[in-house]
Length: 141
Figure (cartoon, rainbow, N blue to C red):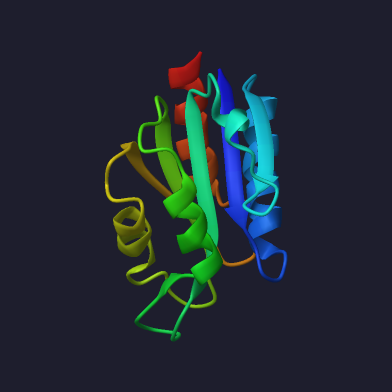
């Protein structure tokens, strides 16, 4: 199963999280490609079964969280139809607040979302992340 992970990172935390997700899925026999929004090329999505989209949480510490403008602009460039299941992930300082809701909205809710939301403060996988990603790998097998 081909899995594509695309991320936007400001300080490197989201990049580390994307890489940790990718390493975990690879260790579970999934074919994983990871790229930043700056390096994204549309052909990477060809034949992808899963697409994980991530960015860091911008905004006030407790409310008004939202994706960075660069991620929003990237989201507008994604194809209107993607024949893959989409999962969102983010990194944050204190709370994710409305982050996922706003990410879905910028993607116009048009994709086949699995509504599996992954989040990390430090760019590392939590035990919960591993359980969720393990279930994803099992579905893909």
